[in-house]
Length: 218
Image (cartoon, rainbow, N blue to C red; front, top):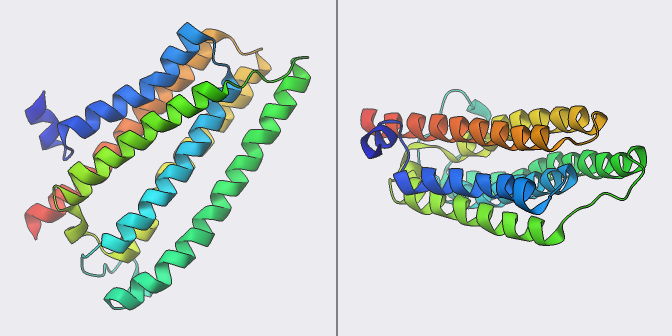
């Protein structure tokens, strides 16, 4: 298993932690009765965590500018000084809009279902801590430990989290609307968690495979 994961470009421990922490919500749904709205809020918080970690990654990125992002071909510290606050505002706006959708869906769902949304604050906290540990491990093991920061420019790193955020945002919210309309059946909430886990893993492996290929060809 280890050789396969390394061939795909990510440290084994980082992949295992990603899968394990993504399955925490599954255990919460199946064993502790976490509802759809707990899951939606938890995934919204995770997108915020991704944004914070990307600020760190931009500040560490040391690769050459890429032709795909010519507008970010500034030099070193000047480039980072411009990109960091811009990313904070730009990504923060996307994250805030995502949050509005999540909380509107939560309030609307409670109203349509004739009950208060049963958000588990303990579940959100436990899940968020697990996701924080997973992203920390990936940063330490892959981005720093495997030297990925040397092979991506600050400008390219600026853009890196958006495909993931958009893919997960659309998948989770559309899935959430569908599940809510059916009255939150447990099986469908569990399937949504599994779908998100698989998509997250695929995007993680694709990202790190690309960076490892860049390292090999450098």
